[in-house]
Image (cartoon, rainbow, N blue to C red; front, side, top):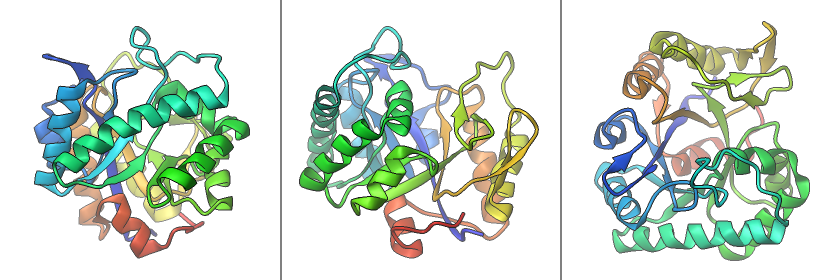
Length: 266
């Protein structure tokens, strides 16, 4: 059972006065330990990045870049056919923007987590993951990359000694391979059921798939999304259930320091 777990959420996904978040991000910031900040290509803008970086400092939350495809209309959920070099350059461009806002507020960049379809493309594309991690080894060797345990991204990061944080998704379903699947729900999910799902993953290292099977999951961080209906209630329920059962919640950098950079068991 992991005794120290990161709790992360995607923030800053909006433009100007518009936001896709289901709850005030100030409230979400009080319950999470790491923030994945939209960096302008799928959502986000300089004002959003500045605001979230400042809040990360105020709440001692780990600051992470959440770079996506150039897909504002599709919210970064549509795959774009581009070379690994082009995609990694897009990632560097976005990461650099957030890093500067972190520096402005005295907050180091803790992690990088590709967004949406780009995350899933890297998960199955060894060439893209290799180019990304090789680039990070040169520009950001201390910055962790967030990914699924079963992903090519995780395998490459481990092979090249880039810090890696494996994610468990509270508000996404799993298939029999241990990968997440995205399904739009007609009704808000039950916060208590999602909290129980997370606790079971911590206690047993397993999750039920969409076919009813149980599969093993390895993870260091639990993710829920700010645009999931009832996001604040979901985050609060997960946090309470974990704390009540002896699990400490801490930023990903502390989880790596506590559990080791290459912890292979859930």
